[in-house]
Image 1 (cartoon, rainbow, N blue to C red):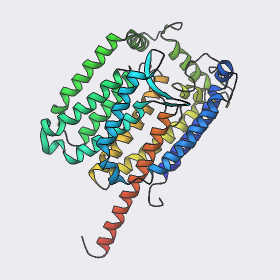
Image 2: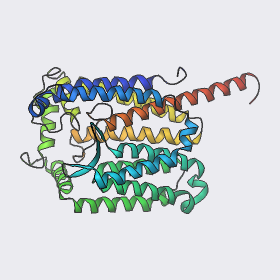
Image 3: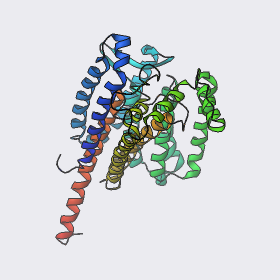
Image 4: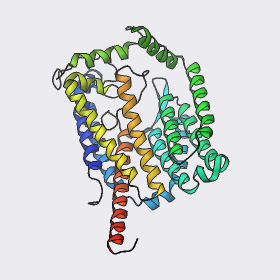
Amino acid sequence: MSRGDRWLLVLPLALTAVGVVMVYSSSAILGITRYQDPDYFLTRQVVRVALGVLVLALCARLDLRRLERLAPALLTASVLLLLLVIVVGHRANGATRQLRMGLLTLSPIDLARLAAVVFLAWWLKKRPPAEHGFTHGLLPPLAIVGVVAALVLKQPNLSSAALLGVTGFVMLFLAGARLSHLAAPLAAGAVTGAVMLRLHPYQMERVDTFVRFVFTVTLDREGSGWYLDQSLIAIGSGGWFGRGLGGGMQKYLFLPEAHTDFIFSILAEELGFVGAGALLALFALLLWRCVRVMARAADPFQFYLAGGLTLQIGLYVLVNVAVATGLVPTTGLPLPFVSYGGSALLANLAAAGILYRISAAGASADAVARRRWAGGQP
């Protein structure tokens, strides 16, 4: 493990540590109110972090060739889990997204988004769209990603399905697919999104709230604009240096989902512009190291895999922060490594471990090349 980019271990763990602190700060009041225990969410997050560190260590030692061979099986397993959650999943807040197994809760979407990236990397290495054309190189992976996205939409989870589609679209573009070939699936995705908004009025209401806010700077503070209004109050009241860790007011049941979807708002309130800026700097540094890994990947599978994983982390950070600051309509996406949750944290730490393993493989390939050139063997 000494050959890889250690920033890919240090930065995710540092962000996870920040997350543990902020989960406790943002959830203690909710824990007291709902469970009569201020440590309720903290203890569960610590257990998940311990499991996530183990997953990170295991993925950092993965045999990438074996992972490549298992790509179809991983995708099949994730599709079966998505089907299972539709049939027997736990329903909460109008959506069915989790499987409950005793004390454990699993969100199959987090496994599915990783499996989809691994599968696409495997497929694009075997059948590059630039060589095999639309029918044989592009249509099959588009259909498979479409099936996975449709199962996610069934939950319903429009935001996760949309980011999965964007990830697949960019990976296909990186593999050399023509923009003219990608226009049709892009249009199909836009139409599907519009249909989903029509079928789910609460999602359409969020979009309407966002549009009114953008063009008229007004919010329905007692209705659909409550989340955004309270989030902006939290961020704005933080000022330059914040109210101090633990000193935020919006977590006193004013801002819903303070420890999950809107944890960035609580961090900005308590640590201010400086603290929020430092967090975003950590994410920027992590994404830069991820792009560096992608550029130095040893083979096409590793290149596409690193690109897909980097996209997923970056897109989730971008959308979560944009939601908190009112730049996009409200969604239910967590902030990677920081938000409270089990499946998402494990998936992101697994992605970090895989990226580290790819960096180690790339470093080995570079070392072999340097030895060959040094010995006069190009």
